[in-house]
Image 1 (tube, one colour):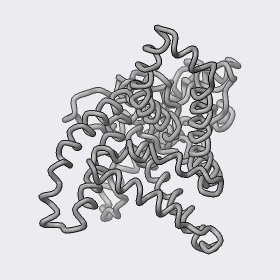
Image 2 (tube, helix red, strand yellow):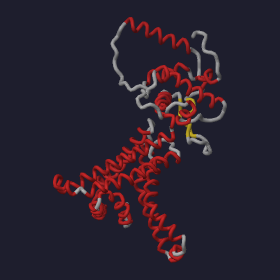
Image 3 (tube, helix red, strand yellow):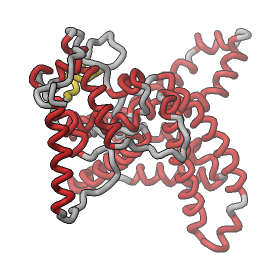
Image 4 (tube, one colour):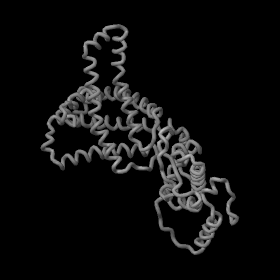
Length: 380
């Protein structure tokens, strides 16, 4: 895209900065990348080649989103239309905006008025200080932008900046350390011959992605401190707790709906209210959504979250047995694959009696009864 406008050479300084930890060979790699772009003939690329190029770019961005969603415990996926428009917007429009900003900045700095102002102290010293900090600020801003935009959930600017700042510091520290390592990469030429720089480059790419993921994980914990717990603890709800949590969620959503206050908080807001880690609450709300008992709806523009939950049907017509059954049968809160259990007449009789007891205890009870604090059915 940049080549079509004849401005692709303006990104070469950014490439040089990215390849700087690779030492002197980094400049060679940057020149090769620009050379490859220079040699691209769009007219000869053909529709198939262009389609494969777009598929590769979209697929890479998709993998980044999947990784970020995993770190944020997000099970909802963007629709195909949202993915295509969002990804292509970042891939195509992003570079154009960067080059445009660089061009405007260069034009302003070259003007006589700005030069006269920079000659006045302390403006000149302040400008030189800012110029030295700009590369680091751009790295932090890039990480922060990724953490806000890529995950399919609402990431607050504060936690995103915390993760971006940590990732930026790690990036610069890793770049300095890796640069020292790359200086001695000549010895690997004996083993890998001309592929030595390729091997070093792949290691640097791996470290770069690792830093990106570490920053995303830190942003998640800053936004969700309730998820900080003993790493050895089992991060899985028992079926009993999953059923109770489903009832708590439905009670909160039904109360808000019956009070005429619009949608209840989203999964993130419910996690904060209930004091439950997001990764434990997300599967339960997903099971309720999958059963059609909860629906996501937009909220007012002035509200804290952009969306929230509404009951899938009127609370007076939403049986509690369906709420409990959604998490009991969906299995989204357990990490076991479906299996076919052997038949046993004795076990089946006791299990059917247990199931009948649950049905009798909840017979006739609805989400409205749960929200209004009514009494359980007499058959409990």
